[in-house]
Length: 255
Image 1 (cartoon, rainbow, N blue to C red):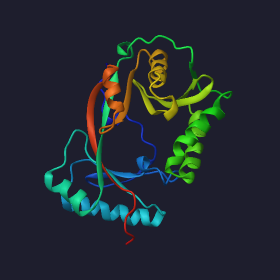
Image 2 (image 1 turned 90 degrees about the vertical axis):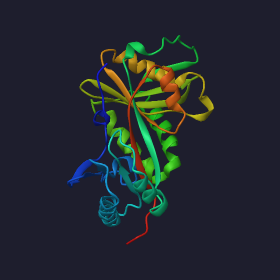
Image 3 (image 1 turned 180 degrees about the vertical axis):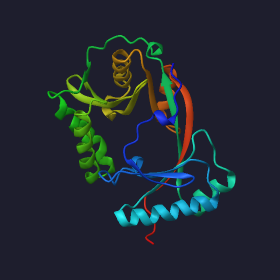
């Protein structure tokens, strides 16, 4: 299996600024998307360095009308006690972490077909079904966000580096994911199954299609470090490759 790091994970947005110890990624087409508008530290900052980066991002986001602040910290490094207390207790950020998983497709469990479940690549014929599923999923972040993401999905549909997959259960749209094609890796992104169809094996069979389509690639994905899906990935023989801490404030005080 190919050795992977967080550098293999696709990030929407462009690097628009770089300092000695951080880079600024910005996505002018999706200002509401936290995951494509952030500062990523190259090295674990001191409290002073964090405050300087925070001040820069506040000024920038105030100019662009963005209300959030997000910071990503170096891969496989934990906060110092002092920095974490500063970020959480003094600056009131929500702190969490992601975990990076990878698998050789041949290690994924063998699954028998289920008559009620149909997994398909997204084509012109089922694209509107896919868009509606994603739109409904994204509505929890607001109408403007959901509309913006629809345009992203449209662009990705025409991008040869992306593949979209949809799942049906008894003929009804039940879940979806996107696949991002790299040189030696394939990333599964945004996998979901709507609530009423969960625990039926749908997510596993969407993943199995990816495994079957790309048997010679290393399949990678990110999991919320504090969420339950990562336990499913472990049972499916994914191997943890690393972790990364993040800090998010959804609304900051105007300067």
